[in-house]
Length: 618
Image 1 (cartoon, helix red, strand yellow):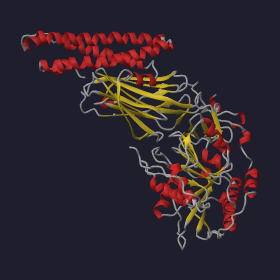
Image 2 (cartoon, rainbow, N blue to C red; image 1 turned 90 degrees about the vertical axis):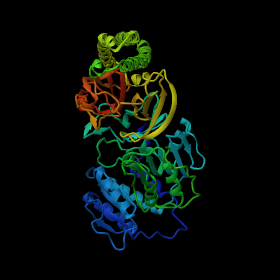
Image 3 (cartoon, rainbow, N blue to C red; image 1 turned 120 degrees about the vertical axis):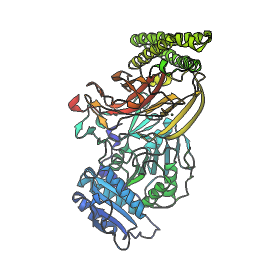
Image 4 (cartoon, helix red, strand yellow; image 1 turned 135 degrees about the vertical axis):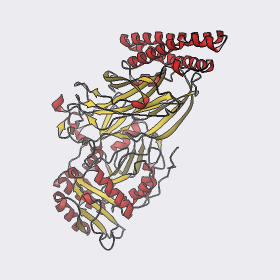
């Protein structure tokens, strides 16, 4: 990630002027391709673009979501030019939705200042007059392939590096994106063009290309590639929330689309909200561009084919009327989507009911004992003495549960009649006390552990029965993988785990439930108090008994426990957790997770929590 990868505006314009002019094509009639000016700061650039291309320019109120008066005849496309920092993300969505309803392609020029608006307009003018160099190429980081649309190969690091360094007409990239970055295997695209800021505040550990620093590089994502240096006429970034030009929920100055448009790109394509990773967006887009469709028409078709829960789709930053000469149609991949008490003695009326309870507790204790052994191996490897001591106490608690349950079974089998059993039912109260102690001990252990370790331990020694894709992550839109494990000691015979490719473990529970979920939105600063939302489903077959809730925040890199919350509660009345982020927490998407423990049953939920540390907080 170097400053030398960032071209100057003069270098970009000179490079486009040096390209061969379009020959053998009739002059395009752009008289019905409307330029909508939504900001006084870009008016001069809009009028100049209209004069250069022979296009009408109209004033609009961007907040209205569409043209206040539809020109006659109706426009064949609309290019909205406005200031980037005055247009919120929801307004962009409204324009895209209106364009879909009117069946008119729409594109955006969202400039930070008049100089950028003039730069973007100049590139659009040259794009209509010149033939961009290079062919079309795809990078599908989700499926691990790259290359020309009809000759995809395994995306090895050296192939990715060669593609990202070469000039292209269309560079279409599909991957998992978040906060101005997109992961590509061993590489990460970074949308920084200068020191990263949030709400105007400089981040102490943010991205800064001037010192070759990207906060998203890790031991796996070793190399950061600045988006501004991608040498392509059209850059398509197909990942969750990759259309990051407008003011959104997380107003970081990192923006992959803005970065690309400040470099060589005439246009950038991104997504609004979630992205369906099962949809071959890059292949479909390449095929439409190869057909000779305009960029607006290609994105419009992409939106018709792309189905996501939010209803939002793909947006174009650039001129929707811009088109390139047709080429051999690219190969189209299949775009179909592939497609968790009360006093026990009071509940017992017969020996059979008591026998069922004792056997269930024995089975559950066997399941959780396997999880304890898995966590113990992690604790011994990590030399965590506090966790080892807590796990030993947990083991003794499990022995007490099994001892009371086996004692109860022996008394039932030795009883000669119902009255004899009732008189000796003090064992049920002993079992209940042992269960309550074990539940509390597991919650205490969880607050010393790492969320990913607890998630894995709950099914480490079980046999995998099935794995499938199931829906999209509500936080990032990535695909969710669901795993079913055979649990011979579970009443339902299964444990079900689910994890997001980007966010990690999401839930883990018995196949019969209950299933816990945890969510946390927005970005937070060190010192903030976080109140994640908890929800639960699948509790119909569970007694409304008291259990223990533990909510933990782990550092994503070091696994350090940053904050904890504990409460004794029922599933029907979950409290609102409150966790204070430590002042020394660094910027990252940290691991936020929770467990609810009741009646020797554990259900796990996980998500990510965005934390940003600004210069003022350093």
